[in-house]
Length: 480
Image 1 (cartoon, rainbow, N blue to C red):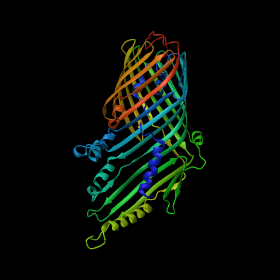
Image 2: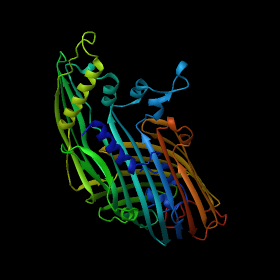
Image 3: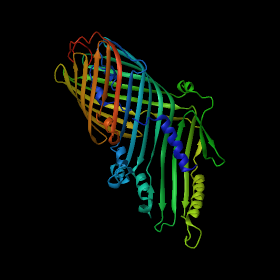
Image 4: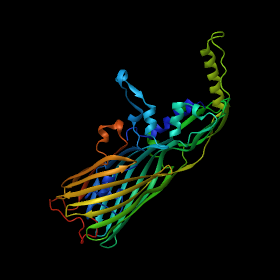
């Protein structure tokens, strides 16, 4: 299969299931007061002390998120200077300088269709239905080095691309939450999640190496990798096993896609909140510890190719026919050889994917009846890598109607993350939003971290009258 065709097919599937714009929820949300959705980050923190709530149908909440390891679009493509000030330029020097040895871009989106919960006495129950997707791409800095400098710096050595690739998933989540106040100090909670995979792409071990002699007589090229796909598409192959077309399954409708329950999975959330005293609480949780098994419309491509390239011998164009036609013929011939040598085998094979799990550790201290200050550590695990962020925030609940949270976060070695959370309530109606970086939407080409949570609730708890209560009410059997 030609390299261009491979790239098109991989890109097609990534674009099919990935959002170009923006599964990390804003850290700012964790300690916001009076917001039921704080349970999504720690099931032991339900956000209401009594009564029940339900969220706006079809728009209960929306999560959008994207982040990199401290590189931005503007590092690669930006406006030029001088005579090129009116043009966009590709700046590989700047881009390469912003990269680590291992790099990634991660995006996610989630839309909750239905959600509701009920708190009575010591017990809290909630259910929700959510559509989720996420996409991750990871690559080595060595790839950029090869693109910029070619193989010249590696003559007499072996070049390793490093593992690269990515993945994408779209799945449906049915979540059942429960938490209980064990006593006046300890609350524990959990969520059981039934998952149904809709479509996925998964890569493993995508890499290649190039070995050359000291005199550059030949290049020894080897490539390995595997791509698993579960999607309503079919592939056409020629006699050499190369993919010639990607087609939608015949008679496969949107309804068939949305009612696909053939890829089941399961996940759990676990958490606790412990009040050390009347003013201080510590908490921790693990979110989205789960797996999905894929078995519908599955295809596996496995690459194990090897090719010995001895170069191109061109005659002097002053004495022979022009070089360009010769070069074109050689390149065409080389392309056909490489296409056969690096042709991935295809088969049907079930596979499994893990959800990107998150771990939270928090501490919250009450300054007075209205304001508390908090610290939060989040650890996200994806593609066998650990990513850590730190957030400090000040949180307030005014007149039982206005929830405010101002935060500062260190994420992926970026230090300009000023966040804000706002929840406004009028009677039973509540709208809230939270983000960890207020400036990213205004400067998207320079953004390293972007996230946004927004939702609408209807809360029936007898509050909202303008009378404020202490955050840690000892008679409440809850942390709010």
